[in-house]
Image (tube, rainbow, N blue to C red; front, side, top):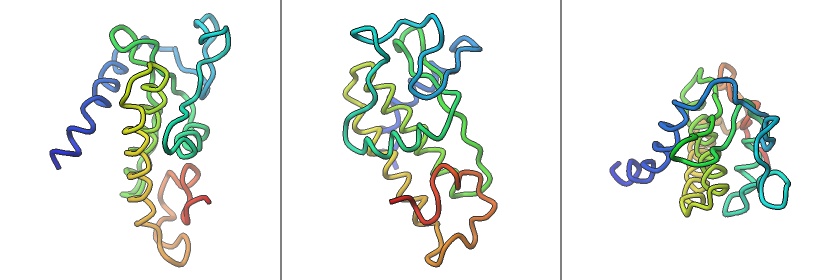
Amino acid sequence: MWQSLRRLAPFCLLVAAAAVAPPGRHSAPGRLPPGEDPGPGGGPPAEYQGVYRREVRYLLDRVGGWRTPRDVSTDGGVPPAVPIACVRDAYVAAAVQHAWAAESYYRLRHPEAGPMAAAARDDLDQADELCPVTGRGGVEGCATLRLWACPPPP
């Protein structure tokens, strides 16, 4: 358990900083709001390219209302909100938060990006364990099936 808490410590700093982010700064995934500074070369910031990049992109492409931070000291970004209606949803929501943290850390060039993506994959594995073997039975009331289906996407 302590190992899990230590792994989440940098993530908690990002989320805490996001709690004080100015309202109305939401943007679509991977897009900057009007007036925001573009990334190097004048284009949008690069997307996470490390381990489990497919899972990070898959999740972040399916949720809106998030923005990565420009820096941790003054702007914590806006993490995605994910509804939770069942136990499986909690794992999918955690995966989305870890994916956002991986994207955020990557754009800030922080070494925790890879571990956050790996944590997202671990969360998805836990969510997959709650999928019935024969299909969707028992998860019909879950709110995150459009984000991460049962059975999981290929």
